[in-house]
Length: 372
Image (tube, rainbow, N blue to C red; front, side, top):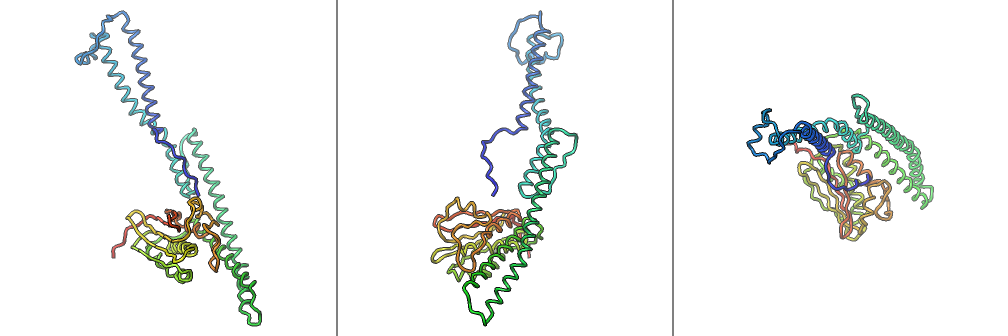
């Protein structure tokens, strides 16, 4: 999981700080210049001074009336003009100077979202910002290469493992179905272990495909996807004595039907096999606010530590002890669901219930309902 950003108190932006700095130095230079004019040009003139009245400002542009009384309103006008000019000009200059930094920040946000193929490619002469942009582009290129290598390794390893595991599974099935061979508990355990290895291989292969984001997107309805997942896993829920309650409203979004069905199936499977309590229940709901499409799974169960929940979406992590039976899981269900949600520009959030159990919420960008 990405580290949480350090909380900082709000402050002035760099652009505003530069603007104030430019204006301050400009006003300071104007004050020093006016002071020099006062000292060197008004020396020997009448030193009578009074605070200028409003009528004195009209005499500023008459050279014959030049003196201390006229100089003060002139100085005030000049200082005011320099202040306004410094603020406006400083704001424009700071914006132009910081424009490359804005491009670099936007590129960093895209990289944080998983888009490593984006490059800044800053034009112009080589300066500090250009060096920073080039270094950032080089870093993204290296990250993209290493990410592609990891994905290829996971995909190739999964493909290579599928063949021997499938052969082993076939041999075990033949041995178990041989009428002339005595039934052995060891054969059953070997078959169970091999089945788990195949499921793990398929899960790793799916993770590799999801990270590449090469799937097609279509208009789908999370309510229909949730209903399909329920139909698939209803026998498992009945076997575990878990009741499923639904509140499914039309929830359109854009994505891959196959991957989103896998997401819903993984979350429902997790809610069923970890519902370790009598009279277990699962509530499944969908909703949309025209901006976000939401799919929620709430299940009863044992009380979970919040510190444990924060690690559940990591691969090979489990919130409870290993579940017995044929559906032991590989610790990748929630990790795959989280990757699928992220690949659809959404997120998966987990929170514990006070009375035990887990609430899993998927939020995806919603799309407008098509009128029929």
